[in-house]
Amino acid sequence: MKVMVGGTFDPLHDGHKRLLARSFELAGPDGQVVIGLTTDAFASRKTHPIRPYAVRKAAVEEFIVEKKYPAQWEIEPLNDQFGSAVDADFDAIVVSEETLPVAVEINRRRRGKERSKVDIHQITCVLAEDGRWISSTRIWRGEIDGHGRLIR
Amino acid sequence: MKVMVGGTFDPLHDGHKRLLARSFELAGPDGQVVIGLTTDAFASRKTHPIRPYAVRKAAVEEFIVEKKYPAQWEIEPLNDQFGSAVDADFDAIVVSEETLPVAVEINRRRRGKERSKVDIHQITCVLAEDGRWISSTRIWRGEIDGHGRLIR
Image (cartoon, rainbow over all chains, first blue to last red; front, side, top):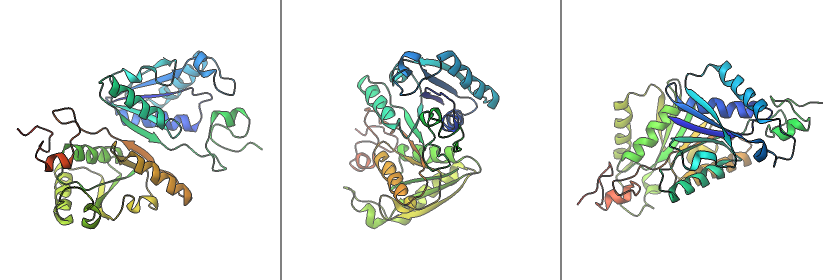
């Protein structure tokens, strides 16, 4: 199947890796994964500094290439929460707990445009050593590393 | 992975089949699927008559056996919306558009019990010929058949 997933992916932590891995798993060997990567302008609303699009893109590409997923894939710029997901022809969207409402809204908008709704796959966030979510903000603050290990 | 799914499955229509098929797909060949089947007492809240548990169970079993899914599976009685999903050790729950809120509530309750949350996979409902959902109620009313074909 054709799967869409999106994010800022900076730095690429274990939560992001889970999101990407599950997207490729769902797509299957003959499927396709479209990764929406937030543009620098859109990502700038985050509370911490974000590395440039090209740097973040290279990190995502490196992860995917190393995993040798058989599915086809491409990375496209995401200028807002929805990107091409309201209009594109695809089967399922993979989201985290935080972004489940975005997926539900995408289906609402698709219905308004008489496009078929897509399946929604919500993964649970990966927990850090302290039982709280791994997040880019926490990594940027120096609380944890990309695997959720506490930095003391 | 270990997947849970639930329903009344009466009569077993294309929407139910999609839900079951996706559950086995997600579980993978080495995985496990637990199908919660509503008890007669719980199913009696439906607006139309429901066939007995044993009859509904046999229909689900027949579908699964015919498909020759390699994963392990079992059917367990569902006495309420949640069944064992609040306490059981599993990875993902498969729901329809109608039951997405139940899955979100299951995770909320799991969190309250300090159990790890599960992934949620929401499939879109299968549409009948007229573009509306296939549902047991519509089949019972004689509007459509189990494949969503209009009965004139």
